[in-house]
Image (cartoon, rainbow, N blue to C red):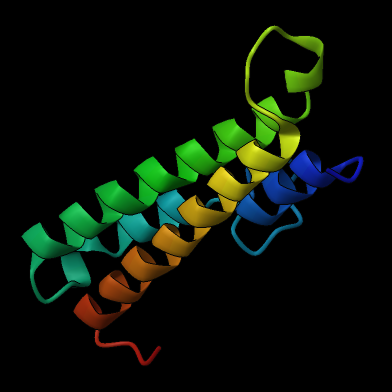
Length: 104
């Protein structure tokens, strides 16, 4: 993996620094809950989104240190995991957008 790849993923996710468009996204999404068409479906999508966000952040963070541990993972495998989590985040973000009658 390229040096800084894990940090770049975390910057993208908004979990490191405040420059990402994703910074504070969970707070914003939670504040929109009452405006959704179906609060139960919206909340379920939000919960899934948050779970994948935390998983992606964790995998990206681990990728920076795994070479110095006894773990069997590689930076590349952890970054692939993070990428899959981001794909899932986008799916659930789309689900929430539909609940808010936003065009995606």
